[in-house]
Length: 519
Image 1 (cartoon, rainbow, N blue to C red):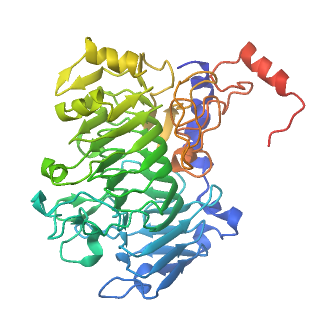
Image 2 (cartoon, rainbow, N blue to C red):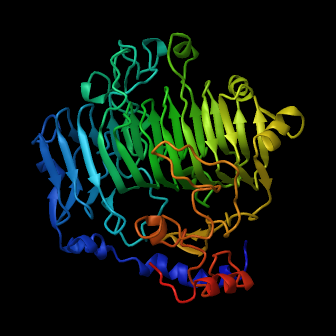
Image 3 (cartoon, one colour):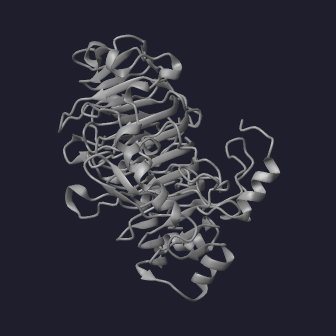
């Protein structure tokens, strides 16, 4: 799909990355003042100096203030943290004991932003104009939410996160011995419909700083979080560890963005039994290694880290995932790394430029053959080895036939479905060539429809975006702000179906809708 539209918009997109995004307009649609005129407030004034718990049972962060996270903030049991739409929190760096927002079991966070007024949590140095380099990862901690739903964490795990109670763990990266760091519940006491609050239209940027010895934290960490929690339209940008990690629990999430992170896009284990739909991930183009290296697996799928947990009555991870688009760098990374006895379904998705497509252990292969682990109706574009089992590349035979024919997965060439390559120069995040993750109208078809269960949208197409339509990242994400994933129609007048070409199809679409309106 590299064609004339690339040269048409390259200059305008590069300019927009530097000048087109106005930090002062954040939250303007909600009546929020310009960011530089907001009243400075240190989070340390809202928490106890010793415990770092919120001082009040109910605390509200308002968008007329500009908050500096100069301390950890604990939303402890019985406490509620409300964050208004358009609110900005900037976090100071504190290597070794990173500042972070931690929602403990029985605490709740209500960060209910909107498309016009997202909630932004970022580094202090971020001017919010799109110019702060995506190579600036690990500048603060990030957001951790802990709940009381099921996990298969067991005392016999033998790692620092194990506790003396089956079903309860200490969340990765935080110190043992503090009840606020625990997630899950004792076996038989789980609360799978637990509600930790609402996260909607929240952008988490430049996090993952070391919070304890040899531990970075994820962009959004979810430990034992229950299905009563709402997670919708979240962006993780430039995190030093995984973008999202699910440690057990039953929580589901929609419309997730993960970009320029230094580990996996989606990582789950310890018996996570939730759902995902509409996941968009892009690894950075800077792949020189060291501080500039970006990304690992698209999905890292674990049942748990210890086989004995399943043997001792634990339930394996068994999520249902539809409509992801993951763009990698075609180095050593896997689109789907399936290991540790995971179950579940990944369907109707697009994976581009991975070294390995589906990479399974022998244990997962057994579940795959039994229909307990499924990868169906996905498209693997420019993937070096679409199928690898137990370290062996499989390009023919019964397993490959199952993968490509029985399960409906397609293997296609470079840029044949989506435009998956781009060029970004630093500093400043200037784009001279960009991805287009939106397939052309009429493409990316599938025979599978997501389940009708009140959570899934009936999106009968492959990938995170409806073919030919405006992407749902527009208007609230940093990705949209810097022009990384603006729709193909941008700067190309007349391309009605956004396929990068102006032709008779566009004329027919215009004729059929002539005289209508645009809302």
